Amino acid sequence: MEGAYNRVLSAWQTVPHRTYVYYMDLLAKTVRDEIAGCSEKAYAKEHPDWEVRNGCVFFQKAKEATPCKEIPSLQLIS
Image 1 (cartoon, rainbow, N blue to C red):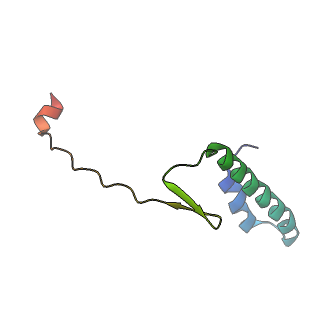
Image 2 (image 1 turned 90 degrees about the vertical axis):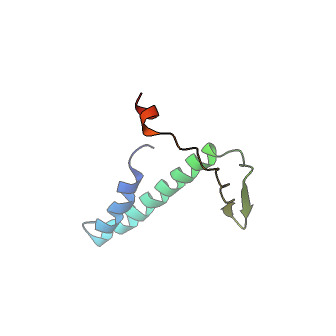
Image 3 (image 1 turned 30 degrees about the vertical axis):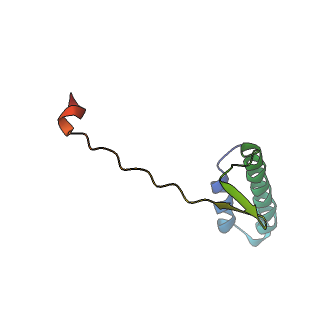
C-alpha cells in the first residue's frame, strides 16, 4: 500500500455521510498498521541510544556539540 497516508487520515473528518464512518475507521486502522509495519522494518535493529520501557521508546539527550571555529566571510567566498 502506497500513498499519502495523512490525506487518508484527514479525510476521516470530512466524510459525506455518517454511514461512511465505519469504512473510514477500517481504512484508518489499515493505514496505521501499514505505517507500523514499515517502521518495524526500518528500525529492525535497536539503536544503542534508545531505551524501550513499557512499550515506549525513550531517546537519550543529544550530546552537546563543540562550537565551530568562525571562518571569515572572505575565505568562504574565495
